[in-house]
Length: 290
Image (cartoon, rainbow, N blue to C red; front, side):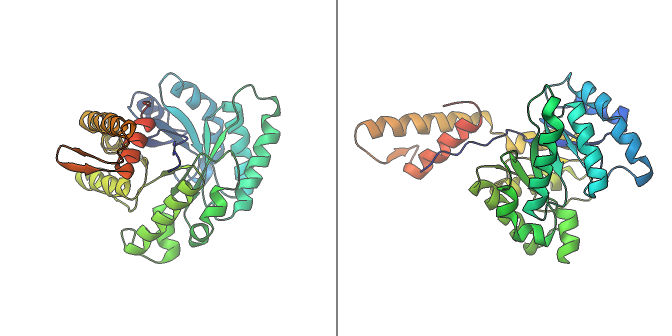
């Protein structure tokens, strides 16, 4: 079985309007693994320029924290090019590309960034396609594989449900979500996102339940819109101390047995074979062990 290593280890990605300094400072003190400075949905049309101009200062504020700094750009090309220029100037870690419904979009963004980065002193900016249309789901494999800059992919449930004409928490949406997860895994990228939609950020129990269900479907982390949701994502998508200890015991026991020529063991009354071993190894690898 080939080894799988997630390119990124983001359990929680907190969306923040790029033009709201108070929110940015709050995000900097949160426990989010990544902060997404939003230039798209959270910004009214009349404030797009102001938000773009605030991007560098927002990135500087966030650089004092341990979180990765991302920016979600606008999809119309006229706005996107200016957003990308601001992202390069500000030195963000990655760009979230909304409405990623065609691999040509990702290739064009890649080419534009390559030109813009010619004089930049920081590392090349990574890309995260946000797949939120039916066409994007149908082309997910090609979209995710369109550029070496792509490190992860996520599903935009709200817009996708509108485009598909289905409830945000319907089996149809879950099926589309799984297709994007599979596309990411098949290309060696990290699958992110939630398999449904929780309207109220104050409904913590429902949010945690959705995160757990999404993790069970293959997601490695997800975004949220309020700092109060960060802890749930970190807990759900991060292993417990007991999970890690159990994985260590399983790996050690199986490897000892393998050296004796055995391909399975009994651990705490449970039959353990190579599939269990690989799952435990991948868990430890994802969290800096092995």
